[in-house]
Length: 192
Image (cartoon, rainbow, N blue to C red; front, side):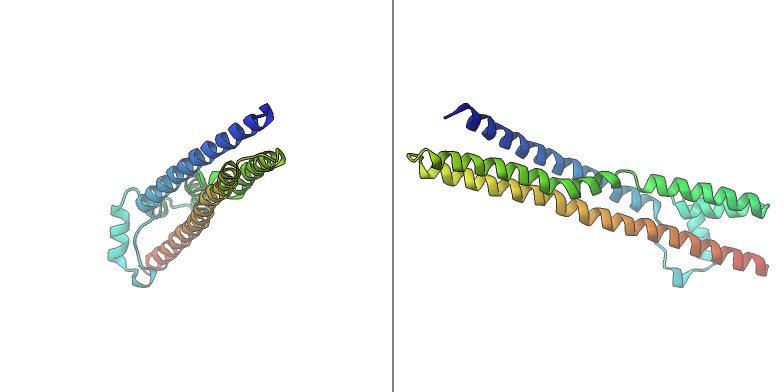
């Protein structure tokens, strides 16, 4: 076996291991974000919003919505409240988006990493075929390895993209829920 084929075979295998590592890393981020949103997003139906549900929200100390409510109740100056609300909302967005750019990057680049491994494995297959006396089983193994690298690249990308879009929706939902609860609070507070 020529040295260049040996070199390309090992690069393909390193790419495979890299993709497996990226898949594990991606799932670690996904599970972390799932736990984060479960902890910080209240389970509340906006159509059933009432004074009791506001009290339940305030009791949940980890909820971002509870933090917004606490801020609304403590700050008397409308101008200062608005600035504090903007700062708090920016902090929520930053904490919520932690790791999502990595998921987006993995979702967009891992198919290309898999494709690189595929191309390298096909080069090895053609190298075996060009000898003329190449073992057909070896050629088929190289082609199967090539297809495996493409599949693994897609297996990294698809969950990463789906999770990225799902969590972006969760962030949007969190901010909308927070605004709705604050509006409900202020409307009822002004009535008193």
